[in-house]
Image (cartoon, rainbow, N blue to C red; front, side, top):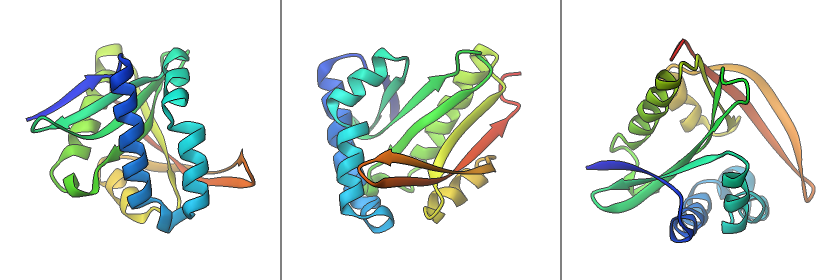
Length: 168
């Protein structure tokens, strides 16, 4: 049974950081390289970074599948309440292909509908072809290309993808 649990406790934050380290190292090294993975994990997905993000309004969720943590995601409501960013969506390699990504997106859709929010959006590395194809199958469209310096000499080269007409 799949369960989404809102992250509130220190142990849950640590579980998210541990999942991030595992998932990022198995998936993103081939896309952005080990040095950028290490930099981004420390800067954006360490326990300290996750605590700061939660304090700033991010809502992290752990995904449990059969009683075992299988992944995590984060939702970030816009101040205007008209959009929600799906800031993170990551599933362990061994548990992909079991419908967990679809379950996460259904949860995010329901979150938007309950709040009358009309737009869900995310960013995805433009070289992450498998994820882009998945998001397109789930109703997202590419809105624009985003290239952002993130420090340490690294750049995020993403697409912003948007899914409309959820809760409006």
